[in-house]
Length: 210
Image (cartoon, rainbow, N blue to C red; front, side, top):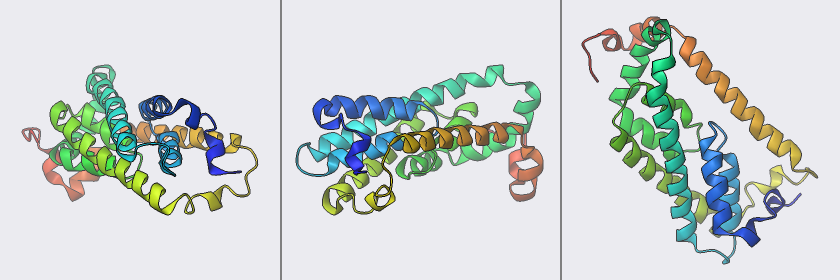
């Protein structure tokens, strides 16, 4: 299977296709891969403007992540007090390094919602979150665009050469998202007071507002 077979509609729909796939792919927690793949596909050749692709990808992804952040920001109200108590040390940890953590998560292809959800729960500054996330998404988007444009898809296509149907790829993406969702549930259930008390005892201080 050729790489572009994953998104056969891309050349016809163009920038709107990228905006929709990237936004909804980023809005669903832990499954940004469709947006990455489509961005890489559209960056090959000269059919699309590279700067428009990178900017569109960064902005739509950031808007989606801002929604996830705000949902987490208000979601703490429905979390049991016992869970909130266990989470407070972890919230203080991510809040202290919030901007750096948000930027790193946005600028790398890691499951960034593992950082964004705790930042929302910790009520991190929304403006700082937006700026750090947007900056990181610009770095990641431009990296994908230029690497794909100048090096082609030779780094990725070997993984697809023995695949005849794109369905397993989509199933794998969904399974990965489900797995990462389970990780977040695990984060909510861990006893962070015991874990961080050994490595970052300052997070146990109830008077610490970081």
